[in-house]
Structure formats: C-alpha cells, structure tokens
Amino acid sequence: MTLFLNPMIDRIRTACLTVPRRKDWLWAGGLLLLYALIYLPIGFHLGFLQVSPQSGWQTIIGVTAQAFLMPGLLEELGFRVLPIPHPKETVAASVRWFWVVLSWLLFLVYHLNPFAPLFFSEPAFLIGAGLLGGVCTISYLQSGSLWTPVAIHWLSVVTWLLFLGGLEKFQ
Image 1 (spheres, rainbow, N blue to C red):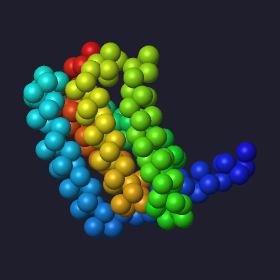
Image 2 (image 1 turned 90 degrees about the vertical axis):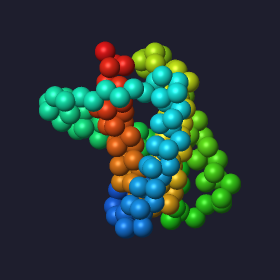
Image 3 (image 1 turned 135 degrees about the vertical axis):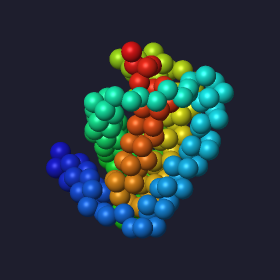
C-alpha cells in the first residue's frame, strides 16, 4: 500500500507546491480563450447555453466559492494530478499519454454516472466537458501546477453557472 500511496502523495505535493510562472498563466489564459472560441458557438447553437446572468450577491458568492472546491479543485486533483504522471516524473511518453487518455475518458464517464443530473448526458454538455478536460490537461502538463487547470475549470464553470444558464439547469 505504501508503494502506491507515496508516489500519489508526492504527485499531489509537487502539483500543489509548483507555483505557476507568468508564462504558465499566459498559457492558461490562451487555453481558456481557445476553449471559449470553440465551445461557445457549439453550446449556443445546440441551445445548451443562453445568456442568463445571476444578480443575487449570495448566489454569486456561493457559486463562486463552491465551484472552486467542486468541481475546480477536487476534479483537477482526481482527474489530472492523481492519474497523470507529473511533468517532472521520468516516465515513457507512451505511459504518460496512456494516463492522459484514460483520465480524460474517466472524466467523461464520471459525468455520466447515474447520480448526475440528466442534462450531463446531453451531447452539448459532454462536448463542453470533453473540451474542458482536454484544456485542463494541457495546462497541467504545461505548467506542472495544480493551480492553472483549477483556475480554468473554476472560471469556466462559474461563467456557465452565473452567466450562461447553467444554474437554471440544476433547478
């Protein structure tokens, strides 16, 4: 058990303590912009997204805080940091890419679990989730830090929930 836990603990520690450089944040911003340029037209075309801003300060604060923890932090730990070898780890490229693809597929399947809201199985949602998972993975591999994919994931979810009709889908 220790042989399995020690590398996982080291991976979490390294990803958490790696402070993103300015270049990493620029990459993250570029990836977020790319995600928006690809997904917004798809989401609006499929009727999944609609402009619907929330204005209640309690709602805004609650959604912002909750989205940081889940899905931002917890999903990035579970689907990026834990399964994918850290960029500083010496592993064969084929091994790293195996874990990248597997973690991405598990990320999609996770959203199809029987306890998830029904709209999680809609193609428009799954396209957005798949693209977001890819962008977050690229950011993690590029920066080696947990914090850039958390920021991308968090900003995307907060924008969807508070401005693009996401919160209404949960009601």
